[in-house]
Amino acid sequence: MIEKRTVRDRIVEGGVIAVLRGVDEERIVPVARAIHDAGVDALEITADGTRAAEQIAAVDRELANTDAVVGAGTVLDASSAQSMIDAGASFVVSPHTDADVVGTCNRHGVLVAPGVMTPTEAVTAMEAGADLLKLFPAATVGPSHIGALAGPLGDVDIVPTGGVSRDNVADFFDAGAAAVGAGGAIVDDAAVTDDDMAQVRETAASFVDAVEAARGN
Image (cartoon, rainbow, N blue to C red; front, side, top):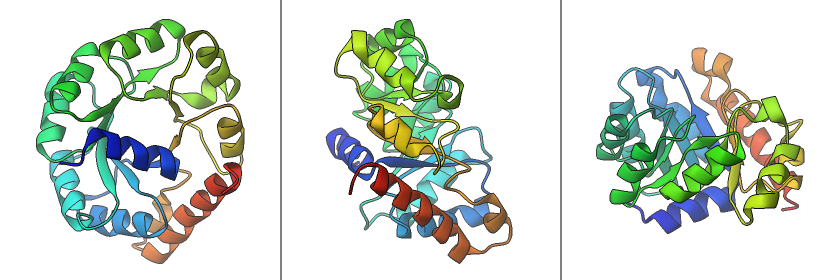
């Protein structure tokens, strides 16, 4: 298993987590490969999909000799977290804050990013031992909410997710985001359906370019 610090570094240095939701099992490996080839090192496969554990294991095998880190998203409880970790997930992301999920991940040395919206949720997540804070849904509150949370809480690593696009990603980084999570803006569902991996790669690369421009890289 990849060390937690290495996983965090790859997420923050790359600046983006690609959220793969609802991708068919037979397509998940080529889609993940295309997105990684586009420059995305952190890939999140949502646990609410069919055979998510098998998908994580398959993608992890495919990208084993690369810098990719493969994680699980939409993890709602500790038992799901355990299943995803057993499948090889290098990080776990939740839409909410659940101390049992955080505790399960910490026991296994797996990076965890619970979802937060309010200062109370952020403090609860931090006290439970969260490594990153997922601001979700980010589009509801906008980029300024990052500063509103970080102001009283100090040095926290916030990853806005939900509604992040090429058009607004610079605003989130300007506001202090450590990285961003993106689903539809980076995973081209139409291209996936058409089995057009070249277009999948092109769409993902376009988002990566926007992230690099936003960060001045």
